[in-house]
Image (cartoon, rainbow, N blue to C red):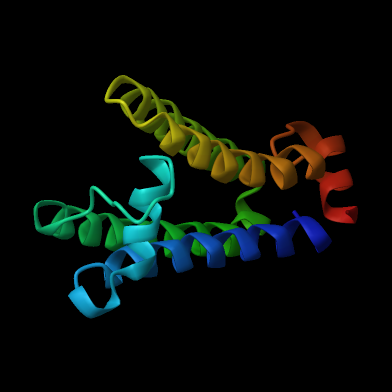
Length: 149
């Protein structure tokens, strides 16, 4: 993956890292405004009444740490994928789709369907460069065309 699509993936990683930082900061009561807003939004309507509280603070902060680690892992894979090629992109795509399906099913089943909507945003913005660049392709022709783009 080259050019705009590789840049897109790097921006995607920065976005995941940023959202993770917002959640990790939720561990600090004076810095939890962003994560409170997220919980208020997924509990719809946005009315300042957030289900985020002390019983959720620890888990949300750990989620932030996991998201930040996830972003750094994808950064590393984006850098290494030039040498590894399509198998790296396929493995990453399977991992992201697996997360999406499990997280979204749990979100809907537990009464938080708007979280599945935010998950869809992450998935779609991940899939656009993957599909547009042909990074999942196999064979020499796909690899050559991917290197040209």
